[in-house]
Length: 338
Ligand SMILES: *Cc1c(COP(=O)(O)O)cnc(C)c1O
Ligand code: SF4
Image (cartoon, rainbow, N blue to C red; front, top):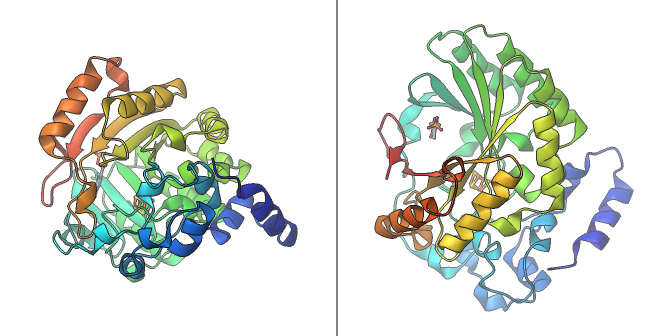
């Protein structure tokens, strides 16, 4: 494990006591491949400057802590290291048809009765395989104005039962904006559920703070939180504490993973992850096939192999611990089961 966190975080905390610690973690996140390589004693030639300029590096120190120093094959490192493989030009920039699914700026609807609100353009980590790495986030007006427009659209359409807060990552917003958003959504009679898709608690476990659990707890509508753990090494003692607090606040916890070459494409890896999740009352929901987005194709696992992995996984896990293998296809009325 890397041991860089203690000293770096202390100095940050001393200067800004009033800011919640998770926001300091965002501030002190590593933003260059060179720094990432230095911290983990990796050769500088493992990094591609071109990849980095296409999609900047962003990795919180808490996440780097969980990586093995000197190991270029570390499954967490592989998710964040900008490499020459990203320079490949095949694939699409809008692989899943998000642009065509916009109902209004920042509000996507692909499926019946649920809408996806892009409430923040920010993430707490930049995952190199991300399907939204090319999304024109600048066009989203985040903050109360933008979110307010989406809420108005939702309030005017009784066919909408569920709002999914997504992004970017909704948990990069402040708890005051999130608390307001939840309370506005709770005023809409025809809504039945609120869902959040997030990776922030995976990389910064202390994001689950009293201010957050307060708004989860206050929701009249059931709150589903879909985490994004890809590998068992991402789960630590602090994650366990955070997940317990969210459950205590009344949230239902699910997880989606992306199947990624060298990161989690083995039965043992997936089994360990799923068991860890159910140990902590998180139900594995989806195992996604990679969206064929430009610069990320090297992470892909062939369908045949993916199906083999899941078939083997099924012989090892209780039914409720088995994620559903899916792919997202532009223009379809649901995810496609494989
Ligand atoms: C994946 C997705 C959803 C959620 O789909 P579920 O199958 O309900 O999890 C909703 N809207 C959009 C645009 C999506 O991409
Ligand atoms: S949207 Fe999710 S997968 Fe993509 S970079 Fe952000 S945290 Fe990573």
